[in-house]
Length: 95
Image 1 (tube, rainbow, N blue to C red):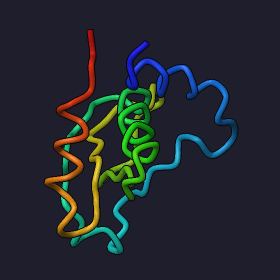
Image 2 (image 1 turned 45 degrees about the vertical axis):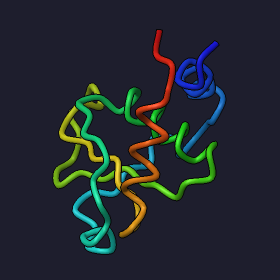
Image 3 (image 1 turned 180 degrees about the vertical axis):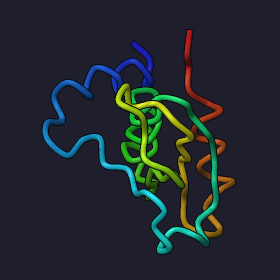
């Protein structure tokens, strides 16, 4: 089972607050966007994969998500951490 699959499985077990996304939060204006997603479930899986690897990361959006938890979702890391995060995400076995 790939890291991505394990992260997606954990979504059901994380519990309340697992869909934490920062909406228009200026604290993350300087953070770098690693990837962009359209749905929260996929974004959470990749966020968890980064966190499992020890990488600090958050999900942000400029607007509230719709009722289906879809929208413009950014996976962001602190300044200077983009390269490491991109390497981790690019190395995931998604097959």
